[in-house]
Length: 282
Image 1 (cartoon, rainbow, N blue to C red):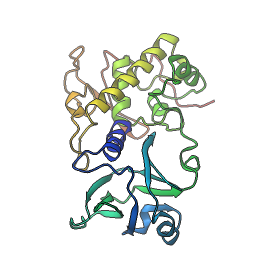
Image 2 (image 1 turned 90 degrees about the horizontal axis):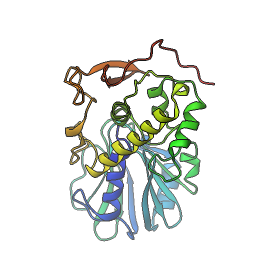
Image 3 (image 1 turned 45 degrees about the vertical axis):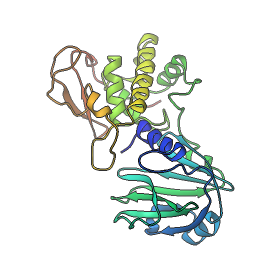
């Protein structure tokens, strides 16, 4: 699943041009094609077409893992889930096998939502808060401080990795960048969140921002057939490196399951808690 850096990379391409396409800013919707109705979460297919036609793209942004396109009247949101992608292409190009929705824009280009596994979703709403209002803070925003992270960690009694994956706690982190951030912060994924002291919370805050910023600089990670062009995967320290030597100490990287997710860490750099506890939020 694409995480914050991959989504930000797609947003930058839609906004500024890139990944082989042109910018969508200022383009008017001339036609729409919903090729699989299951991709559309809201509204109905008929209402979607009636509302989107004639609207102009004013901006493209991101909230957590959501792509947010502001139109002249409504807001169009995408969640890519496992295999979704947004591409800009010429209207003359053949329709790809897994295109689920297309918007024909003026200037002869189209915005296509491609989703092999059909898990991605689309919303057209008047108020985007109806979709993203429950998300936690943006980890790269200025108001997300070490003190704020520590306060939030102290408010929960959950295993650290499980909590960081919760989009209501922090928006945008997923399996890759959580593993990488915890390794940089020298924190075991099974540590209980409210046991972290101020210095540990500050290390975690700094590490989260470092891995996300590096991921954006490297245009995300390309680790399957969907996301190409990024190269952060060439700089992983622990993620999907089971058995490889830790770049810090040389110990073999280990893998366990946390919240049913493959979790990679170094037992030397990230010592396990002395007495592992079970998640118990409170």
